[in-house]
Image (cartoon, rainbow, N blue to C red):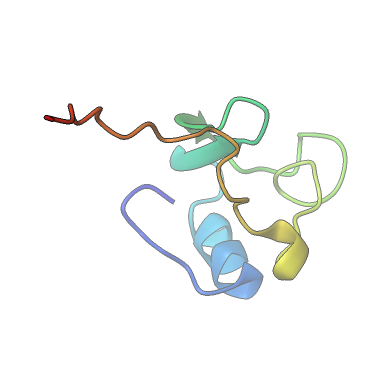
Length: 81
């Protein structure tokens, strides 16, 4: 959440509940493109679906950021003979 880190879903829920009907900045990770983008949401009960975001959230081992699939290239160092 913006400049805050949270230690679990309960703390995240508390932050969203405290900001009900107000803008909240979130960083969202896209696994397909391996990018992070900032989005602004307004938590409320009108989203449809579950909870004040309209969706369910998860945490734990299956909900971690994956290791990058992209290869990191190293600079080419010329060899001298």
